[in-house]
Image 1 (cartoon, rainbow, N blue to C red):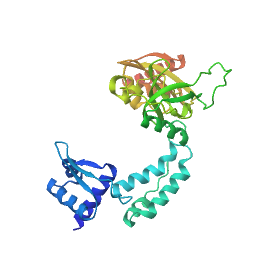
Image 2: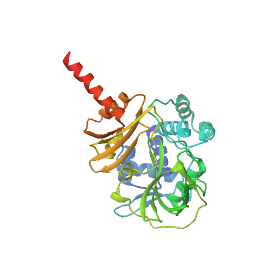
Image 3: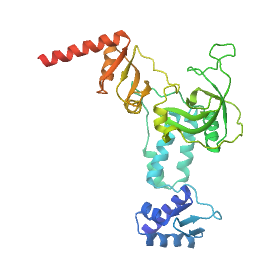
Image 4: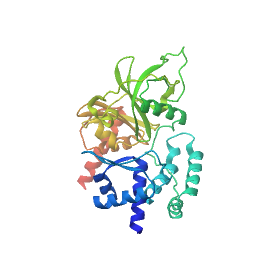
Length: 331
């Protein structure tokens, strides 16, 4: 009986996430036979939940709209995921610290005692190391406006902000009129939020940092979805060199051409660096460290041919490191 009750709650949790499931999917998620799933569905029906049978090759079960689901049907893993998400939300979205804490407290009051204990046992202290340079947190209003435009497929109008977050004055040399963009995807990468969209002014796909956008009032103008060049959003973001990233402030900042594709370098480059796509086999990495030897050492970790090193201090540091390693071999 205990197993049946537990599976019934799991079934409700699955229907809360998605109202329609195939019989095979439910059996796989619950790790039981299809016959057992059918019995559990009958249990839900006896409890008053309108679970309809969907016929056909892609059939299965669908929860009707005539009965509200009981709220907060979390298992231990879901409760843990929510606890982690709420405690780390403020690192990427501005001003969410207090709201996230209130949400966590509210959640603890309405979940069963066992799950409340799971959530209360997890207390996170977030620390940064020297290589973590996420973008500044996003204002909730901007994130809501951009996310809504992506979801509803509405044209977005925005002004581009400077790297310091200020809006150029109309008389400034870097002033540009508002841009109209078809927003297709929101991407979070290395602590930064990016918007992937199709620019209507020059018919070009672009990647914008969300923290560099001043979003205007929603237009309500719908657009037809397009396919991102290459069909891979992650690859497109990683290989777009003008996405608005800037190098973190270091005493020494150098650059080099690396015989590796940008997506490979981007996956392993420390935070605060900038990766530029040159071609399918080469990229340029701009990176900082506390010394020129540090910059040279980081570049060496990619174990690939380097060229076009700048500035001269970085070239000299590489030569000194090579001499030191030769000295190690001589001993």
